[in-house]
Image (cartoon, rainbow, N blue to C red):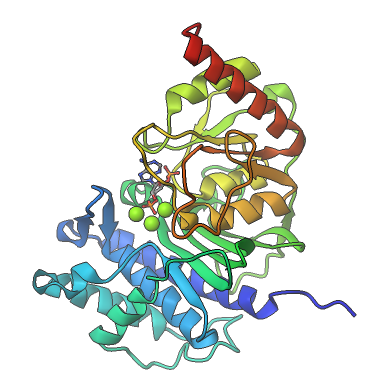
Length: 357
Ligand SMILES: Nc1ncnc2c1ncn2[C@@H]1O[C@H](COP(=O)(O)O)[C@@H](OP(=O)(O)O)[C@H]1O
Ligand SMILES: [Mg+2]
Ligand SMILES: [Mg+2]
Ligand SMILES: [Mg+2]
């Protein structure tokens, strides 16, 4: 008899992402100026990022006490003497979310809905459980509490992203997108969805609300015709070389405008057929991509029948630590389109090298 893998992990991951999404959505409406900091790499981080990491890590810690976590944020700024206000706000937000009433699907998750608040020290320690370095062997989670913080601050797309990695293979991915329309055909309609994939078990879109009775939708990347194809790409010019995407689109004969969207919502859009190719090329500034920015998206795309590689066609390596190593960019697409994109990238690179474009 074969058993379905990762049933408990999936249930816990969905519950954790749902709680974190509730938090981030409510924080957005209340954010004030001094609740956003600039990190050493000049990128923004908000009280929402820290408290969402506290919430997810707490839930994972209760359910799987031995699991390690590679999380984007750490509590250093909260521990600093100047961080008192920041710390108080994060502790308040995290506790508010963790002590909220038990939701459908959370029945077996110990510690939730208990009404028991954590101390500031406990919240900072649980955020720092995300300090694991990752690696080739063993099991660990990756967490990006708010992916696309810049999109979050603009009121656009962002995602709460969680993945489970075992021996360098992504086994489970859960991506919560509070601002993503439930259906791309109704862009001004209902928003908020979660994307879930377990290796070997398919990719699904489920409602963000735990009390919704809407059934999961199985996702399969469709075979798009040439006139339906377009590129999915970052909003931020500093994150991807958008001028190169334009050249690749030309080589591919793509006529539709690209869809620009922050965060791993791009992988979700690809998985459900809203755009045919996610292309992310390095800007050349030496930036190393982080595993939490691609782990859940990669298993989602693969389980939706697609392919993801670097721009040379090599597989991504999630066993190198917190980063994916030397950055050759990413190409994700349906199977047939993917090989065409690799060819087009090669051609665009050659043209660039010979100055003929
Ligand atoms: N120079 C750079 N090149 C590529 N990615 C970068 C980058 N600087 C930051 N990023 C990453 O880009 C992510 C957002 O991706 P996108 O552009 O697809 O929305 C950020 O995630 P966070 O917002 O979680 O920090 C950050 O990790
Ligand atoms: Mg960040
Ligand atoms: Mg990110
Ligand atoms: Mg982030």
